[in-house]
Amino acid sequence: MLDTVVVGAGPNGLTAAVELARRGFSVAVFEAQGTVGGGARTEELTLPGFRHDPCSAAHPLAINSPAFRALPLQRYGLEWLHPELPMAHPFPDGSAAVLARSVGETAASFGPRDAGAYRRLVEPFLPKWDVLARDFMSLPLTALPRDPVTLARFGLVGLPPSTLLTRRFRDEPARTLFAGLVAHVMAPLGGFATSAIGLVFALAAHARGWPVARGGSQAISDALAAYLRDLGGSVHTDYEVKRLDDLPPARAYVFDTSPTALARIAGFGNHYADYRYGPGVFKIDYALDGPVPWTAKEARVAGTVQIGANRAEIGAALRAASREGRAPDKPFLITVQPSVVDPTRAPAGKQVFWAYGHVPHGWTGDLTDAIERQLERFAPGFRDRVLARATAGPPQLASRNANYVGGDIASGAVSGLQVLLRPKPTLFPYRTPHPAVFICSSATPPGPGVHGMSGHNAAKAVWKRLRQT
Image (cartoon, rainbow, N blue to C red):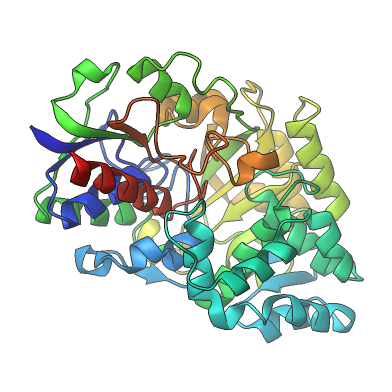
């Protein structure tokens, strides 16, 4: 009998498996798709030689993850590549605000009236970032906070809505860039703890950047799987699990799946019936005949580029997708251009690029024209660079990754108490109604992103159980 079976080979499932294998437990991972990866995959979606990331591409949370930093992933081929700027937010007049590694450079891009306010916001936390990140990403209490005072101070700043925090700024560039940071998790700007979301992304950039993985996001997943195998674990792909009886006998089962799928497989009935899924996304992967022709020079050297003319436009796009049930006319876009720093992703002189906008949950329309109209506002002539495109709305995203219910790449709404307490309001979110069954997906704290911390935290609950039985 195995000690542990893990269902789902995304970053969280693989991290949980690695953590358990490192402690001497026998582990087997079962994945429905043909390759490991979940939200961290790389595929040729458009033309031969163009390697795209179907989901995550830039990785501020991965490089800052306490779980990943404790693992020898570089030994297994993971190499981080840093663009000149982690992120840029261009404006229609050709100017841009930036999120740079340097706090000073970032503050200067906001203009003299907001430079000091930004410094005062981030500089108190930056020297203690590593401890703060560990404490913040271990909530609820899987471990006692190492620095409860700093965590409490962060909570005072981060728990209010971002609309209150941005009142510290007087001009639009700082307010707009920060609104864009919050929108990465598809949260309404006035929601609970949205200030913390924006702050985490900003601090992550200043601490270690927003890199891409050389060769694509698949390198993260492949490194985790290779390390697991060296530890004696096994990985089985093309293995769909429909019920617990499909799995070999084990002392514990860990699910890197949505709560909906777990309830169906394990027979938990309506246990997760109150879990809320958020809006979906419409994503386009592009093969380009050269770089994106951004008007703002800062955007040309940034790994990630946020697209939204101002805070009001970003807020309207989020409201349309999350509350009004319609696709926005001017979608807020998150775009990533790995080729600015990784020439291995496309043939010589060509580039890969992706963009996505928010749409209602389960939306079945086509946002291509709206996305490209937005891109043309900030990069005139963009369409002329397009060699091929691969589009994916909510149905396609959900078919590629069952955790993206209704196209929700956050695996659950990041709003209300569900920002912190997911998938149930409990201090033991990784446990389920069955004492030998656990959940470790992005539906558990600390939530969405490629960081492995949900798997890391769940593994703690599993090995406590294994020691007791």
